[in-house]
Image 1 (cartoon, helix red, strand yellow):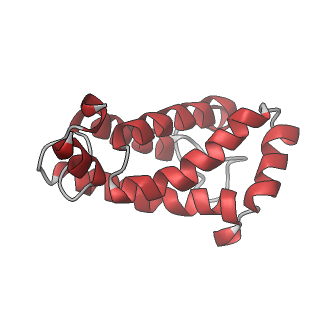
Image 2: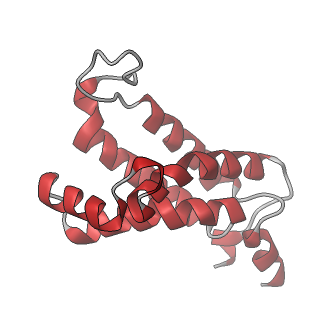
Length: 147
């Protein structure tokens, strides 16, 4: 448990986790709560399971991972676990949806879908958090010091 939570007192962790947490929060809130124009839990579960053919457990884990995971990152709680889950979620999104649309986002509305550049950024930031941990001002650091 200590290895999962262990981190240093650097600024790298909080910069990375606050950036990623703030960016991922609206995506999770769309899926779980229906905020920011999202469909909420029921609508997202229906879309993922019926239209995309995802098993219900995977759909559930994506919704919970993005919503509660982003909040956990902001607090620096289970940072490495959450970062790893974001890597898995983004790899799934790339392979299931975004790969056919190429690298670039649909900036000018000329593509049929969004590219995967955003997802690669999330993977990169999450991978850095896997290495560095949560850093200063994190719940992980406070728990690790007590262990």
